[in-house]
Image (tube, rainbow, N blue to C red; front, side, top):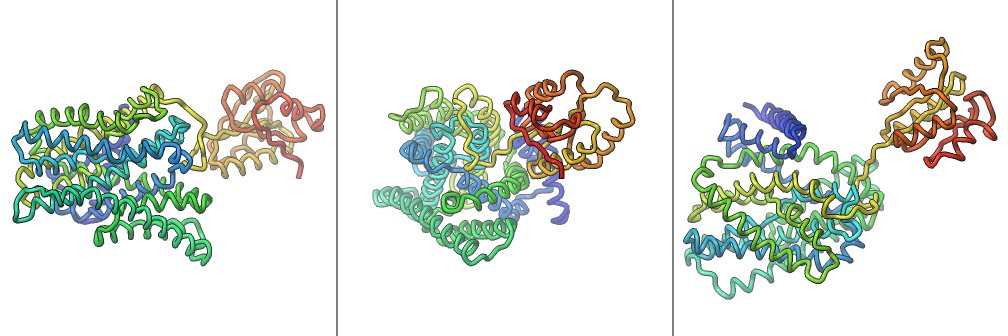
Length: 533
């Protein structure tokens, strides 16, 4: 199968699989992972391991989109409020879970300490592919935003992955040396120093890159459209990941997230445009990410290790990660319910495990096949559970607060109510309503209080409505009764965003003392009055 056919199969199969599982009440990412399993070596073998490795660049793009969305959505004020908690969430849960995994593997699996820590560094990493979309959705709905809980989780997740990926690389380097699995005091001392250096380097590189990007886009006016802005920003963000891979002196993932964060602070209008663009990118990038993730899962290896793997995951989560969560929120203003929310909101594993889980096996590390199997098992269990449990538990454990639309892409359902009669002025109301609907991507309710629905004038009005609203979803309502009361009542019942009404028309009466005036005086919903041309 050629490359074009593979891309079509991935996109179409992932989309349909995600929609099917979503309709069944399950996370759509689970459907995409299952499609990947079917297309991979455990199924049709269309996505071979070699092909998945060749398509790893698509996975890197998807991760970049995730991190840019996270950075653009961070709230500086909330981070100042919860800065200590965010930093502790970035260090303590992952390290505590890693240590518990090492203890279990040493005393239960009879492994050496270094290999146990290696497995722990893989399993303890959090998944931006699951956590970032979930937290941004909570922010757009207002859950926990007053205390900055989603922001703390987003920041902590990025820091945690940066620290654990560094520890993984150091442990892997030690295991592949000829001296054997001996962890010296010097090597142990290097880990926190290098981790701090990677984090500081990522933030500094992100800040400098944001300044440079704004200089090119706004001062030198390198671009002319929002599409140009998005294209340049995307290339720069991908460049940061590539440079960090070649020159590992800073965290590339953290640099991308910092780039998005500083862009949002320096130029909010640009950040708003980028937020919308990267939100659209994620719809496609998520399909590639999770389908390729599913194709890389070695189902065959899971058969012999799944029971012990599940036990290891439960112990590491309930003992290690829970201790880390408790220490991270100690002394904070979080309620017990909000602390409990970390269980579903901060435990999903997918992206990092899929990216590095197979490396020990490919490099011939002892027990590498078991490490790969347990990493795959952690994806299959925690990713769907995290995606399903986060929106389910948020309304029960978090408080709903006012949404800040400057920090997230907030797109509430917009509905306009156009109140018209059979006069010629109705055309102007329809034109104004159509213009507003196209600008806000709104639906329209066309309301006409009538006594003779079969009259010729009414039929002509319906034809004119179809002509002016042909590209806009709309419905007709024809109630009876007093006109002002009917307009306001239906607007409240249907929860419309705004009412559009004419200054004249609706009986050809003037605004003062007319239907329009009555609606203006009684409606709690905004009213747009259209004047004659």
